[in-house]
Amino acid sequence: MKYVTLPDGKKVPALGQGTWMMGSSSNRGAEVAALQAGIALGMTLIDTAEMYGEGAAESCVGEAIKGTPRDSLFLVSKAYPQNASQKLMPQVCEASLKRLGTDYLDLYLLHWRGSVPFSETIEAMEALQQAGKIKRWGVSNLDTHDMAEWIAAGGKDCTTDQILYNLTRRGPEYDLIPWLRRHKIPIMAYSPVEQGRLLKNNALLQLAKEHDITPAQLSLAWILRQPDIMVIPKASHIPHVKENFDALSIDLDEATLAELDKIFPAPTRKQHLAIL
Image (cartoon, rainbow, N blue to C red; front, top):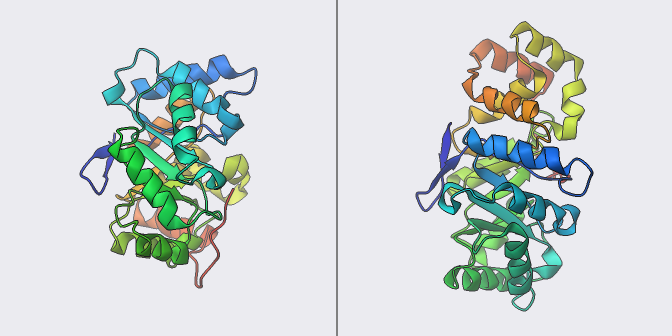
């Protein structure tokens, strides 16, 4: 396993597990088994949110982690922006903890920007941290100007910005990722294969075939080569989990990276941060 070091010194797996669209289907048994297989492989960073199935994904994770030593896991959840107030955030955090079957979150994120002032959300998160309900806090889907506002509002202890970042969504490389690096805030990349759409790219398919790997593995290896980025692909079946895990052992040479740059060019101007 590769690891990313958070601002407080905590080392977490660079390759974790996402849970978007999990828990609300007839596939729940396979999803629980997939999460457990990932944990066994060391993919102990698990990302979820109250929004995912309106709590169904958190319940799915809760079922998957039963019996696993809590201190071996790194659980992340996110609050709706409308719930990010001093009044509501303690309530929704407690509901997430109950669904997950745990006493605390390792990381709690604002899911995206809403109407609640950043300063109020930060105060609510700090109160949850002081109460032992969360270990760390951060944000998701905040662009460069949002991050500057967040820091100015008192958010200098932000642990991460979870963003949409993959080969077809390289816009953050222009300004957001450099800004985060200057402020020593690690990145958490979601939808690394663009919810499966990236896997249909013919040029990517051909390049992966030449390296005797899958396009998903090539896409993940491209992100994992960066030391300060965590990536959280979703896998609903055990073979898919193992496929993702094997991406950790793939080293991309300069020629392959150059070819990927040709297929998926880096940004040459500011692009608004996309959200899925």
